[in-house]
Each structure stands twice: as C-alpha cells, then as structure tokens.
Amino acid sequence: MKRLFIVFFLGLGCYAGTAQCDFAINEIDDFDSTHTIVTKPINVGYMIPSNFQTADGYKMIEEGKVMFTFTQNDTLNAFFLVIGLAEREFLTVEEGFNVILKVESLKDTVDLGDDVPKTEASEEMAGAELIGLYTVPDRGDFDRKTNMRIYTHTCVVPLDQVFNLSFTGIEKIRINYKTSRHTITLSKEQRESIKKAVQCVAEAMKLFPSKP
Image (cartoon, rainbow, N blue to C red; front, top):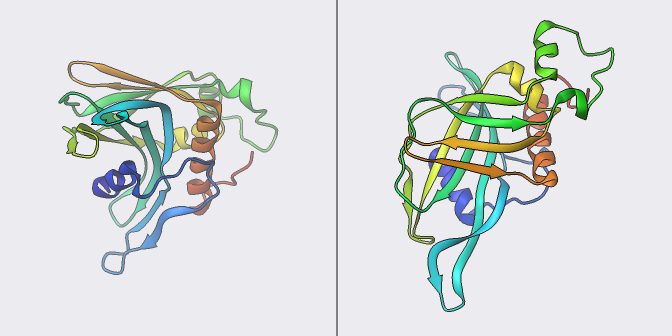
C-alpha cells in the first residue's frame, strides 16, 4: 500500500477531480481472499515549491494527496485514510493519535432527516469539530524527483467516523510529528472530493447508501 501511494504521489496516478466511484483498486486477492478497495488519490492543500531546482526555478508540486481505503479478510475489517505529504526535512511520527482532522459541523452541512437513526453516536458526531485518528510510525522515503521526503500517514478510521466523513467536509488536516507540526488547509472542492470518496467506498461495501 505504501509503495502504491508513493507512485501515485509522484504523479504516475494523478487525480485532481471529484470522486466518481472510479477506484484505483477494487479486488479480492486470489490467495487469502483479502478484499481491498482504494480510491484514486486526491490532491489537498496548495501547490508548493519542491527542493528540486530547474532552469525555470524550483519544481512545483502538490502539498499532499489523500486516498480512502478499505481492507477486509478473516482478521481485518477496517477503513483507512491515507495521507501523503512531501516534507523538506527528516521527520519522525510516533504511533498514536497523531493525525487530527478539523471538520465542518454536521448540523451545519446536512439535514440528517428522519431516515437516519437519532442515536447517541450520531448526535455526538453532529457537533464534532476535531477528529483524532490513530496512525503508525513513519520516517518517510527520499524522492530524487523533488529532493524531499515523502511521508505516508496511514490512519485507522472508526466506523462511526466513516459515517461522519461521508457527510461532512474536512477543513484542515494536522500532522503531529515528533518535533514539528504540518497543517494542510483544504479548498471547498477538495473537501467535496474526499467526502464523495468516503461515500463511494462505504457504498461499495454496502454499509449504507451514499446519500442521507
């Protein structure tokens, strides 16, 4: 997964538009029956100068990319938000809740209506603003095309937050490294693209309809 994401990040599988349920991967492994769904990468943040200098100046690259994935087998049944970032320095991220999403209020973005059960979890999500996601350690991989390190932050997304992110937009993403922080601000179009990507994966797994 990490190698695939780095290939996408470097532009061999670039995807800048809104999600249309056109997956990069949607297959069941022939050997262990693992079902894997991976959306195409979505650009997030701004265009930034890399550390690779050309005759016309520093090469411009996307600040980051995001993919939403699902993996299911006999021992694993989980959603993941995969965030790729290009960093100028060598950084480390520890295991733990080191990725924080700032999301729009669900009450302000959609009317849940009578079809959505009014559970304690849904009421709590309706007023959510910050979501902490659990991620694994990463030290990045050096990329000669940008002279920067590409970090892949693989975050576990609980089922209740899958519901949340399918209806609410992500305003900002904060990565807490061991010695620094990186905050990405998403445009309205980028928020909508991630929201639709979550809806597509959830609908493909027949968890709930893509529309409230």
